[in-house]
Structures are given as C-alpha cells and as structure tokens.
Amino acid sequence: MPPPATTQRTSPEDRTRRVSVAVYAQDLVLRIGVVHQLRQRPEVELVDEAEADRARTSLVIVDSVDDDVIALLQRLQRNAGTRTGLVVGTFETAALQRVIECGVAAVLRRAEADQDRLLHLVLAMAKGEGVLPGDLLGKLLTHVGGLQRSALDPRGLALSTLTAREADMLRLVAEGFDTSEIAQKTAYSERTVKNVLHEITTRLQLRNRAHAVGYALRNGLI
Image (cartoon, rainbow, N blue to C red; front, side, top):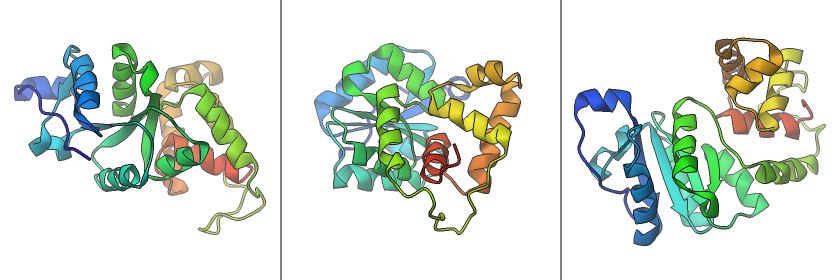
C-alpha cells in the first residue's frame, strides 16, 4: 500500500481549525482523485507521509478489501489518535464485518465519492460519528441475523446489558440517523446522545458506533 498523499503546508493556527486527513490509496490515480477533491475544501488539512501519525482522520481508498487492506487497517487501528474511513470500489458482506472489527468508522463507495460526500465522511469521523450506506447496513443486519443470538459474547457478558434508552439510541444508529437526528427523535440533547453512545462502547469494550450496532444485533439486544 503506497504512503499517504503529500500536500500543502499550513500554519499552526489553521491546523487547529481544520480536520487533518491522511490519504492512503492502492494506486496513484486513486490517490490523486481523492486528494484533488479534498484539497479544495477549507475545512480539511491534508497531511503528508511524515505527519500521517498525527492525522485526526485517515482515508483508505481501495478497489476491494483484501489481506493487504486488512493489514493496513489493523496498523491504523493501533493509532488511537486517528479514526479511519474506507472508500471502496466493490464490497462483500463478509468484508464489512472484517473492516468494522478493524476499527473502520465510516464506509463510502468509490462511485459515490464526490467532494461533498468525502467531506461529510471526514467531518463525521472527526466528530466521533460513523457513516455507513443504508444498503450496506442492510447487508450487515442480514449477515448478523443468521448468527446465534443466544450465544454469550467472548467476554462473557449477559444479553441484558443495555438499558431501554441505550437500546433505542442504538436502533436509531442502526437505521442511519446521526447525532442531531437521534437527539430530535428521543428529545434528548446532542450531548446526552453522545454520552450514552460513548458509555455503551466504553462499557462493552467496543471500538465505535458501528461495532456497537453489530454487537447488539449479534447478541439480540436490539
């Protein structure tokens, strides 16, 4: 996998206002396309290879998910300071669960990766949110629906580990709603929604919202 894209230098003041992004791609054409889209947006600061570890977000641009991609995602996962999004050409259902287990917070199909969607992906990750296309979420639901929901999690946690409020919020996450929409539907503040979802992921030792949804569905909690 080639190193992240190089880009313009910015002042320390600009860096505090912009979301730093490291771009990883399988080939030069893919990299140039994404970098060109993001470079035009003032909300984003593209970082070069030497500073990639300090990026708040990382974008991995691939044709499909293979072992090399998984290895890269696992390496990025070890950096607690960055959140990773995947922009992918073709996607298998089984690969979706693998990338979620690798800590991927957002997925976007390359065919839909225009400037606005890429920016939305980056900003959502920077705010601690996840992004998953509705049809991919449907595939995930179908996939985990076939698993044994009566089985205990490897950590030995019982299946009654969510309050009614937590379960309601996770259902809304599973349906594709973001923080502000969940707040409107539940009549809680956005801060409360974030705190509740953070409490779920922390208590159950999960990586992000997508992982929490997968866990809850796998264990029959929602």
